[in-house]
Image (cartoon, rainbow, N blue to C red; front, top):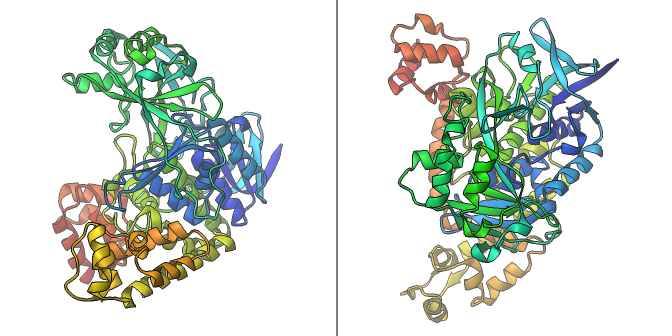
Length: 624
């Protein structure tokens, strides 16, 4: 049997869902192929979205018109804004979600998008002709012809799970691995490698002594993930809990190390350094007496709990015996143990910034197959791959986000320019323009761009325009409203700040650390009245305006730096040099430049091993 589509998306994880939704909504006839329609957007590890830097990515996906933020808001059972003690560039939203409701909310969305079909099957072969992909063939011997294919297979490519010395083929627990597809792609000269990740034990909540743990409640203010004007949280809000390991726990874990796949040679691939297993923690930090653990609910009604911080591939009996030495788990019962999983990934330096293969035209890669880890990183890649697959089918300029435009831009540029030697996880420290890439202004940065290509809806664009108008009104008022010292000094003392010696503009007062728009407005009726005219999303708009006021100097400074870098971005060098013959470059620079073949001088400057003097050589040669 044969079918014809514009775009095929392989895999319905977080990358695949965003890719398929974006391509179909832009007008491409799209088919999403998944092994199991009941596991669409499955949260293989923690049922949580967001966190440090990851939350910013989800806000960006939402600003572009994606669905991850919407689904998260609909299924959240706890929400928190992390890093509140730091500046707004570091604020990061995070939500614990109901795992099953997350899946079914995504499925309901996908099943009702025009132009999008879903097919339950396993792809085992990529079809290509004359250096371009032409479709796929499945396990059921069905051929799908397509103009573009997006691969988002997650951890399923030759997936192998490890629990002690037990090895089970699979992409997730109780789910089969995808065999033959890696080899089908590699035949075209695309290089691949192996990586490893892991997940913790799942605990039966009825066996937990919660009185032996510290409770961690969520927040219930106006913050959320989507910029759309949505109703308040729909599900019951639940707490998380924290506790610590101890020396008795560590002693049992050490007993199990000879049977650990990580230390007996069973696992050869590289795992995520920033999310280590519990056995890695006790080996790496032998003098540390305890490690913090977070017990998190898996859903609104289930007893299943996720033990964050206790990823492990140790034998089952070791995992259980060790945990029983923690007072809260002395009567522990589990649903399933933690395990490690090895899987294939493809070297992302073989990709363009559109996430299209440099080797096989119209084949796109997104998610963990590019060496990343995390739902958010996957979804961010997915929406960009989906957009550009549509562009390849129907024409138009490539859709690329730069490093000063989005964390997604930082992520993709890091992947295609630097490659990966371990599973890549996004951190705020990876972004040199953090002040420009805040979670509060993702819509201001990205929605208009997305609206112009037809992805962000008219409703979303209208909300952006309204937000901009209201913010400008607040800024105009604060810049022009004069305050006299006698009128405000008593209030300033009450708010814990120094009285004025003479009059000033309201914006100068708001710039003080102790002052917020809301607490000063209570003493200025005219300002209170001005704020009262904001009809919708008042809290969001006031917060965004306040950030703009207090951090305007830093924002402008980063914009100037970004503009200087953009000059190098404008200097195209792809195809202009035979790097092998440029003896004035260092040997390492020649090798790296040849491998990456950067598009611009700015990208060349970010390649590890290419020095500033090498960039100066290229500049001189360009002038000649």
